[in-house]
Image (cartoon, rainbow, N blue to C red):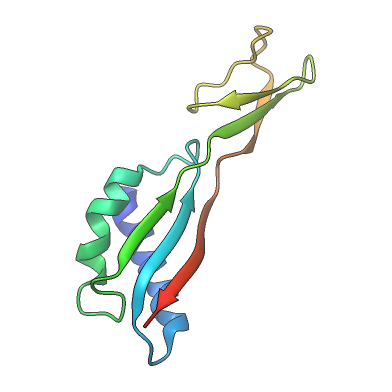
Length: 109
């Protein structure tokens, strides 16, 4: 489960920026086609935050839908998972959004 390592990296990054403050909320944007399971991140968050200035913080996750572009017909379309295919039938597509993993905000006490 790589989500444990990802969640640890997020907590470490937040702790590194807090100084003497305590986090009350951490806001993430995890795209639906990022390959990261948000439920697993939620499960791991309290475990890896324990004993840090992030312990007890609320975790808010925004999950934007993916977008793709077809190189064959030029269409832009919504992508719900990593099995990409354009409505025109082409598999010559690439993800143009929804693959991000970002810390968008941290609320502090």
